[in-house]
Length: 227
Image (tube, rainbow, N blue to C red):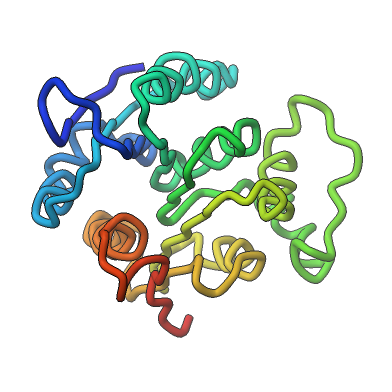
């Protein structure tokens, strides 16, 4: 998996490391180009950033989750970092799938406009009346979408902070609102915009202010707007 590390201080691990996975057909360099590093530096945050892009075969055979754990998360933990894992669109799907396996090892999850599976699974959840009324049943190891939604349904048991950001006009907004309904209101940040980099940049900046900026007036408050 190809990565870009943007360290807060050269030669020294920051107390927090955020690993972000891109949308399909995007590259780690796109995070840099779109100002994600600049937003962290402008706030003088002691946060290391890792932008990682799995290859398609890793996603298909699910080895991306092992690679993310062994090659990126565990080295950060050994360096003493509290690790957030996140992503955009397909990257958000991978981040949530990883958290479903390793929730207790993470400081938090930040997903922006996540892809949340096919209409088959989300339609089933809608017909059940929402994720908390939905029962996933016994799951085989390869039922990835159901494992992801079971994690969304039960993530509170792991005491894991989950931050969901979405654009009001995102083409996947209906599915994302299903996830939003399963979270506490303060875990959800909705802004105007669609499934595009300007919206994701806005959501990223608001995530930084809500979750990582050491300001008592902002800590833990993503500032949800009406959907």
